[in-house]
Image (cartoon, rainbow, N blue to C red; front, side, top):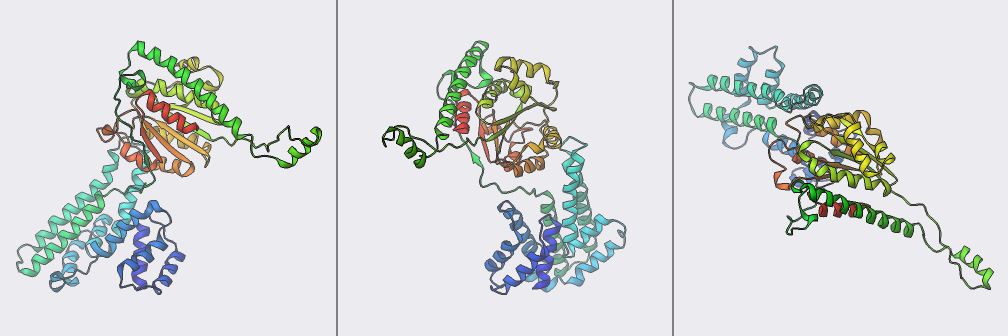
Length: 457
């Protein structure tokens, strides 16, 4: 049993799941307290010791199923009577003679022989190399290049193994062929299976399609020039309303609870009548906001209104850092603090040095933010990303967003596109959703105002 646990721990480490020696020792001790022959108890003991985060549960379940069920080299039932270890090793020994200096072929043959750790390490290495390659090669097609070589090797092995078995005939050879077929299919499944973190806590705010014809319910992308001017006036009124709401909110909160001692002391001036009521003062605990807004042509109709609302957040929170991007990233915090809203937005469009005609690249934006601005995120920060998630087939580099999430209190994504389009074409929204706390469509003024009110209240 100890050797089995050690092999499974090595298998987990090879796939990127961190398992320490102390956790293995704890697991062995815990198995003495349960019945290892009862699989639910056995699996629960392993999961309790090997998993550190709920987001790793799907990864662990996948590894457990692979190791204890799909990758078990000792086949059961009819296969065990005909497929002996010597039979499969005889086939593999012939192949090993011609591939002694090929690590990829050796890892594949170890996998076919019932030793999957080298193959799992290979897949993990490919995933790591993809992240390093994506720093140089922007296209997300680079994600497929490392896997393609392994897939070709699996297909090559399939052909050579079938050639060695064919012609021998007999029921045993048919079972041997079926064994290798299953192992190769499992290898293909492991190669093509994408590990996505669990995100049960994701809040998806669904909004109904606009039913009326009011200006607040029209899509930003369908506004005429006259309606755009009217919308600016409405947004100005909404911004003033939000500021008033925030002022009343913090005025009420700073009052605190009744200070009995000071109230009684003041009452001595008025013959014991508590005319002056004194409250304990407490400073307002305002949050921090970081906003990153896509201002590319595909979402510009919505972005110009988003910038107005982002500007209004300056007076609602203690610290707001604002950024815009197309491919390059630029900070506009200083511009928003120095000028009024209309002039600030005009300067954003002319003084940031961004190439507004470039192709949108979310992966490049995340890389720039990671290199230059990551320290501004902390556990009091709410990160708001505004954009459609369409990255023109460039690498999404979602692991950077995962790192940003780990440093933030919340990650909220506002998408000006309807949800039914989030899986079409070059959209990476389904990828990014796994690393957000909340995603919501934000296509018109009504939806945008509802979000801002929820945020500040």
